[in-house]
Image 1 (cartoon, rainbow, N blue to C red):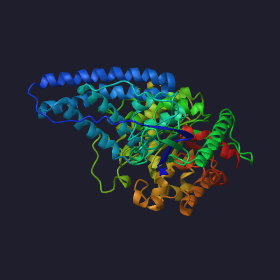
Image 2 (cartoon, rainbow, N blue to C red):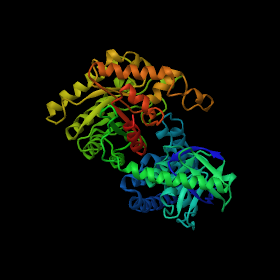
Image 3 (cartoon, one colour):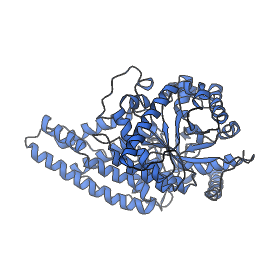
Image 4 (cartoon, rainbow, N blue to C red):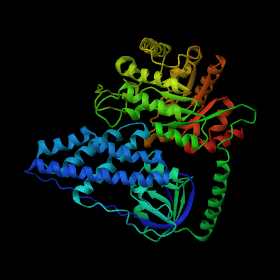
Length: 538
């Protein structure tokens, strides 16, 4: 039995097909004709863009336009003048071949993402590598189509699957996939969930533990793979597979059902999103709204700050598509692990406790006001709420509100519409905010508990450190006490309290959170229907 990370729920029993890693060997060599080498690189870029757009069309038919959008963002990276410029500069200044210059730039970009704490952002490094590998293959003349001849009931086993690998699998034959590396928030895992294909990632050495033709059981619930199981094990998992299929059919009936507890309390089940197009998946799973819209996506993979108009269009798209349902948008949460190439930040001994999120925004009013103006303008088109991250004191919240008021006055003078009564709240992720929740609740319109950081700050346990991962416990009495205090403080002042950390979708925590009186549970779209079912049982 091999244990990894459950990336997409479900069970499968199939035959192993090992996906060969086509190693693209890069040798550094000196070039004399720099212009010819740059032209060769540009030709590979154009070929890669065309291939990505073809993959996007195929993915859109099978997964929907929102999931296919990842390939458009891949193509946009190839059009980014900073990306291409860095490669060309490497060719020119070092007089080296395009392959080596490209690899250096890809490694630099991927390294920036790999150092980030946020799991979703960290997994974007795989996207950069995917794009780089495609361009490299075109440079070397080694691009091939989806030529793998798969039999029925195939379980693809690979070191890793890139988004384009996943999109090009024959979905009528592939019943699951397993990888050595990867996480729940990689695009391949997200696509697997959309396609309802079981997947287990992070198995470390699964490729060396199987051979082509082996029978394998994939358990996407527990994150387990069983190689060459006995007859009893196969029977057991056939039964689990059938039961899961029936449960999924039952859960789909809850899409249009309002979530009400046994005590009769109406609960909102909302979705966490990272880009505007993600609202489609929230709606498809019966979401009551968006409980967390991470705005960092707008600032990443570019060489300058997004302007007001670009931000406005993104926020407007999300609130319009949600048709009056609440959309809680978190202001820029950058710094710490999330760095921008065009925003130099000071080197810090402990960046996660330093200059980040609201602390940067209050210091850099120019950046903050651009975003706030865009958010205010978008509020005229739907039920938009603004949430400030990393608030540790009342003074910080009041300063943020003061800047928001400045933006309102400016927009009034310019004759631009916005909702003057939009709700503003804070993400409770610093223990100090939870301890002082009774005071903060007098001034905010809502709380949303960000458990990912709240837990690690409370327990002094880095959730990304495998050596001490056992200390990271959402159900620790100290954490539960802070959560309960926050909910009670909100209710005492007649305010609502939600939760947007991973704990909101944790099946083991839902009953406790319902008991505490949590008003809104916000999570990944794929977890929403199960959460609705569990909430209604409590």
